[in-house]
Length: 103
Image 1: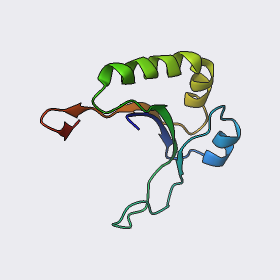
Image 2 (image 1 turned 90 degrees about the vertical axis):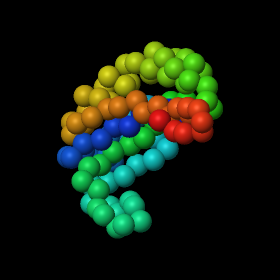
Image 3 (image 1 turned 135 degrees about the horizontal axis):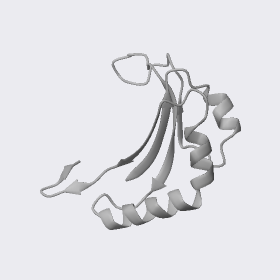
């Protein structure tokens, strides 16, 4: 995925948040879970939502997809970002730049 919406918080109850979600997340994590190879426990809970599946080299399509996603889901996203325990809501874009690097 070239663009995701990541919502997280130190005290976010992801199960309660999921019950109120209009869109199913593609990824969920809970505070204290071990998510990485180093076994370090996460300090937050959160959810990730797919915003764009455009190619990493197609920045214009990513932006177009993101604008459409945020416009069509505006009310739900506002409610989601105000959900108790949400500390951050970030749109993460991944771009391929030349020579083949990622940003």
